Amino acid sequence: MKYEVVITSKNSKTNENNGAPIGIYYKNDKTVVAHLYEGSHTYENLKNNDYFVINITAPYEIAKFVLDDGIKEDYGHIKGAPYLLNSHKIQLVKIENYKITKLNDKYGDSHLMIINGNIELEKELNPPKIEPYNRANGLIVEMAVIYSRLNIVDNETKLKLKNEMNYYFKTIKKVGSKKHIELAEKMLKE
Image 1 (cartoon, rainbow, N blue to C red):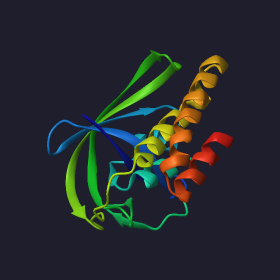
Image 2: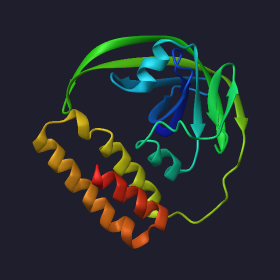
Image 3: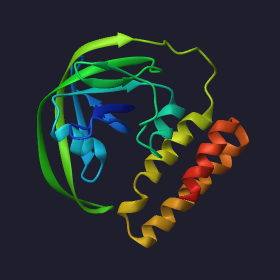
């Protein structure tokens, strides 16, 4: 199963922290796989680092990272890798290996880095408040996933994706909070 998280890493040249929403596969309790597309800061960072952190956090936090790299966020550091202080839980991952492959899918031609890593440390930071489920949480993450693909598709596909985002936005306006609506509006303006 694939889980949406925020991966944090450090740029080895500028020493800047970076956060990005990424889907992670857990092979077992200690082994993870991540697929990163060429062109992202995380892709470049992880080619040059041994560690990254999986931040398990609220859906809204995952979605907001699609608009920026989280440079202004509050970070802690462990083994040189940054983590989000507001995460529910963090997992420090040691990169065991990666391979870069060419990919041709519905979004076009690109390079994909497949990372295999082992979780070396797991720590609960801010256990989540138990609240009733709100559909805006899932929809804002879906909008973020679609938004992340807008710059790598042709104009026809981009129009279809924007229509899908607008469809999700109608429900977010009905059931979401002000912050969900504002974040969705920012994604739609881009």
